[in-house]
Image (cartoon, rainbow, N blue to C red; front, side, top):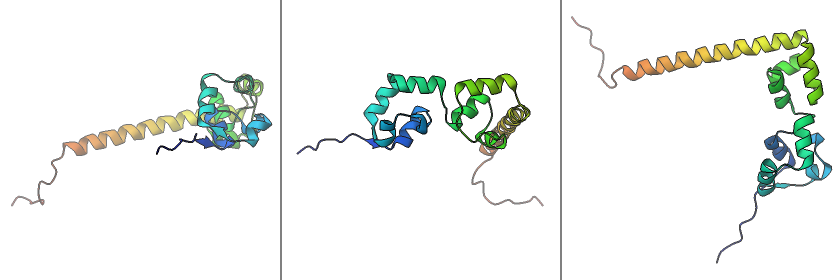
Length: 143
């Protein structure tokens, strides 16, 4: 006996995150229902008009806003950006470059440099530890 395989579904919030859109800006029927994996795959390859418009014009979720501005999500909060922004608002910020945005962009560059330095240091340490003989026995000083 074979059973009918049911379609995998997800909550609207999960689907909105996977689609890269702000949930509160999606149509009411999207927010009220469940989304099947098949629907999600179809929308990713062939987005309906409402999805294409949201992706193009916004409002965008914080992670998208942060990426477009070149700052972290924490940087958005420190800059006082608490709500979703439209593409036009993001473009205005990029054109105007308020002091907080300049500082947060510089901060993110420094953080990424430091992360790269740490990764390189860890790689060097791993490489050096791989060269050491393992299980060579206890250390015996020469007399």
